[in-house]
Length: 173
Image (cartoon, rainbow, N blue to C red):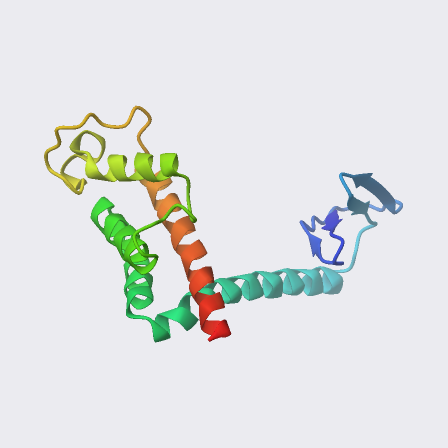
């Protein structure tokens, strides 16, 4: 089976054995096609096409990071931090660099609630213990603190959005 999108791209190829007639299903503007068994050669070609699409997607992500990084010291630092283990301290540094680049505001990249929850989590010793940015705190930890993996995902998402903005700025310059 594969999902065929409006642009003609296909995703989710699954090979099955046995012979079956071609069957087309439509749901939510997506066409799913079940086809008879295909040759090993065609399977290899479809797999190569899938790998090429994945490569192009990764290449687009990397280029949105690398292009601005060559022209901007902050972008280069953020890129280097993202290549290392994302500890609460490094995540805080990444956000500080992005915030400084954006004139002190991150609200166009995330909601105030998300940002507050993130910073209160990475800063609080009751959430991350000795790895937190602050070893003591007079504030209570957030009621729903971010886990390490959630905070890492949040920082990566914010950095990717920021890199895309930087790439647009670099292309327009």
